Length: 497
Picture 1: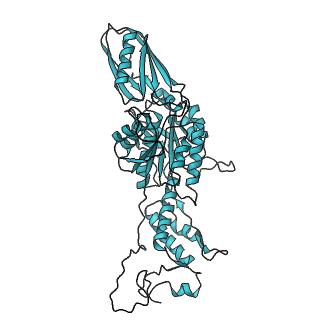
Picture 2: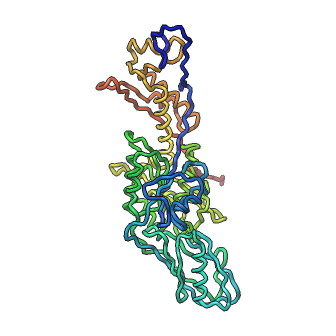
């Protein structure tokens, strides 16, 4: 047969030297994955970004204008960019729900200080301090603290003082404000003798925004990593279902979600049980100074960067910038972390300098649709690797066979058209066996990157055939064996007695 051209007519008569230029994709390596992160942020009334609009941000200070000074949304962006400065990041905003109640908490001063002392606090993870004098009454110290908090306009709470009591009010309304941590920073400065400061945690926030509104606005938009601050049951359920649909073959808009919550071991176990989803990661710490939405944004940022570099490699030991460890008494034991993993909660380790690193990042998937315990989708690397392979394989097929005819392996047309007269593979005609050969070539690349293993045996098990009902439909069952990760090294160290 003659060579195949896309632009040059087969019966051109005028003397000419005709040259068409096109890419040959037969030797194309693994295609870059277009990671694109989205933060659905909680805005204040002063924020300029209208709900339903989407903008790209490169610097944290841009988010202050979009979400408002002292907003949760501005903090989310800052935490993301602290951990990841390169992944394209987009934001959209949601305002307080109508009738939302703002969370409140208090700190009550009693007594005095004997000498001038710098008192240090952590309010929503931010360092606040003032100097207490021996002449200061409890009411004076409370007023000084409230003034210091209000002077930090990036803080997610405002403060008011009366009769020795500082009352904090979340700037954003809703349950999300209950996760704001307020504490005396005794690690930096113990409370001096003669003074007591009693803390009542933030609580009573109610009425989160309806996440579904934002999800509907991005139904057909490509985003690969998404985080938002709302951990209530309604929004978690909506998020999980939306992520599930995104992963369907007919959608092929793979996205992975990240949400965190502050809580006790029991609280987090309940949080993990809210969803059973292979494309959603739930995280949490007990009594960390860092707000939950900052933990989620930091984890999302790390996953976006490192899983793009290698989707099959675990994230263990990576430090979450800006995420502070809880006090030792509030840190989960190894046994508690193991139990949390079984409920769908990712776990962390804490270093001596007070920083926090990832121990095991998982999904909330735990059981099949029949209720059978299943760990097939446990680790975040599984959906990450499968998304990467699906994207590459689908893109490669589209590039190599964009206008191909489909023929049976043993047909005369197929046998005559394996190669054109120039000796190149003829992509104008594809057969099941030729598609399998293409799959084998891609798997060789995936194997070289150590995303998958046992390439030869899995390629042999992979099948491709033309549908019996539709001669224009090629059906396939490609198989891969995702490489494992060293999670547990069990040994019996014995000595000779």
